[in-house]
Image (cartoon, rainbow, N blue to C red; front, side, top):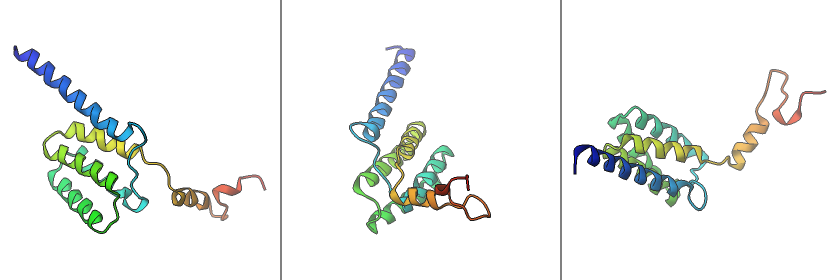
Amino acid sequence: MATGERTGTLALVAAVLAACLLSLFTGCGSAPQVDGQDRQILVSLATAISARNPDWLAANERLVEQRKAQGQLSDPAYRALTQIITQARAGQWSEAETAILALRDGQEPSAEDRQSTTERRLDHVGRTLGEGRGR
């Protein structure tokens, strides 16, 4: 097998693996949901991966393990996050970045998120988003 063919085959295998990983998040249902208080982990992990920073990755891994030990992460969210961390640790930064962004973008607003949005103050008058402009 020529070097060019081997490179093409490896690229195809990597693309198929990335597609399979994405299907875990978007397949039959939706992405595993991460509770609101732990969604900052998604942002922090995405930053560590996009920066390709092993120290930040390790810090996020410790945080994920800590939150799981405290019972704060669901099993599906924990599995998704640890799979992404494992990919990044293996040097598959691009694939891990694709996966963490898919997981982040697959999060649905919680009831708490919706409530917070409707109560958000729009200006100094004290009007909230749910009240409208015409008075």
